[in-house]
Image: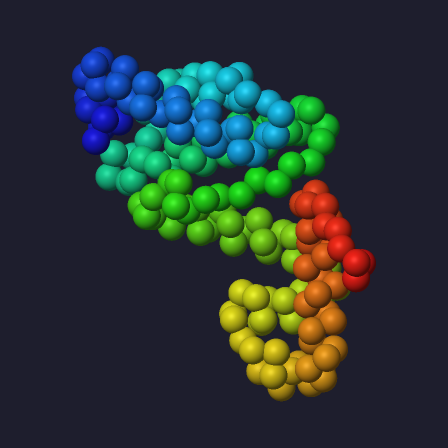
Length: 172
C-alpha cells in the first residue's frame, strides 16, 4: 500500500515505506552475513529501490519484489568479497504475495542439482522435491531402498558443501 502511494507521489508514504523497510532489511542481511552489521547493504538496497521504483508493478505484491532486490544486493556483495554464503528465501519473511520466491528457489535448487551426477540428482528430486517415499523412489529407479538412502544422504552432503554449509558428526 505504501509503495503504491509512493509511486503516486505521496512523499510521506515513501518516507514511511523506507522507515518500515529498514529494520526488515537489516535483519535480513544480518541473518545471512554472520559478523556483519549489514548497514551498507541496507543502504544499497534502499538506493536501488529508489532508482528502480518505477519498475515495480503496483498490481503485484511488494514484499517479494523488495526481497528479490535485497537478495540480488546480497549476491553482488558476496561475489565482490569472493566468498560463499548460503542465500535462501524465507517465505515467511516475504509474505504470500506471488510465485516469485518459489520460482527463484526452484531455479537455485535446479542449478545445484545439475552439479550432482544425474542419477543422484534424480533420486534426490524424487525423494525430497516430489516427496516420494524411499520405497517409491526405489520402485521408480530400480535401485534398492538402501541404495536410495545412500544416494540421498551423499547427495545432500554434496549439496551442503556446494552452498558452504559445514557439517560435523561422528559418522562423517
